[in-house]
Length: 253
Image (cartoon, rainbow, N blue to C red; front, side):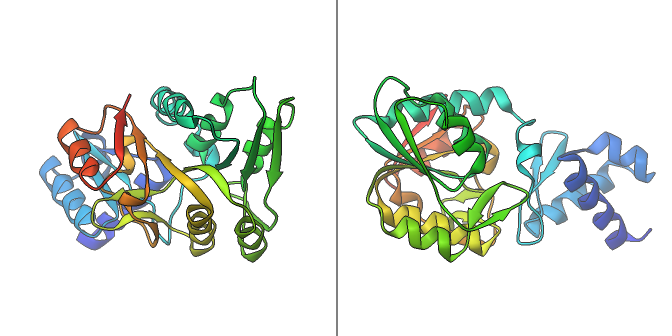
C-alpha cells in the first residue's frame, strides 16, 4: 500500500482498537518503526491522533466518536479519582447539572446521598443510576436519544434546560485546549452543553488528561468559563499551571 493508504489503515486501527503501538504497527504493516512514527506524526498534524510514548490514540472528531460502552473500559481508576474530587466541589449547591459521558456518570455516583439534591441531566445512564436515591430528585431532559452515548439532544432538551437556573454544572468534553476551549464532535450535543453553561451559576469541568490539547468540531465554552478543572496527574504540572492562568483552579488527582 502507498503512504496515504497506510495512514488510513493506521487511523482505522486506532479508531477500532482505541490506540496503536509503533512496534505492533510496524510488524502488521511490514514497514520500519521510523516509517510508522512519521505516519503518526502526519496524522497528529492533521488533528486525527494524539501521540503517546510508543504509540498514539485517536482524537474524536466530526466523523468519529467513541461510544459510552468503550469509555467505561478506559482509564477507569483515573476517571474515578477525578469524579470523586469533582463531586467534593459541590459546596452548598442544591441543583446540579450532570453532563453526558462516563466521567460525569461517575461524578453522579459520587454525589452525596445524605442531603436533598435536584439533578438535571441529559444522560439516561445518570438518571438510571440516581433514580433510587431517596433524597435526590432527577429531571431527565427530553429529546432525541443518541445511541452511542445514551443521552438526549436537540431543541426539546435545550428548551427544557433553558428554563432552569442551576447552581452547579459538571460538564464534560471530547477535547479541551487553551486556544480553542472545550469542544465536542456533534453540534446537537454542543448545543446542550452550551445551554448548560448559560443556565449554571458555577461550572466545573471533569476530564481525563488525554482530553487536554485535543480539539474537536464544535466549540461550546472557553476555559475561563469554569471555576475549576479536575483531571489526573497525567496532565503535567506545568501545563496545568498554563490552564490555571486562564482563570480556573486546576486540580490534579
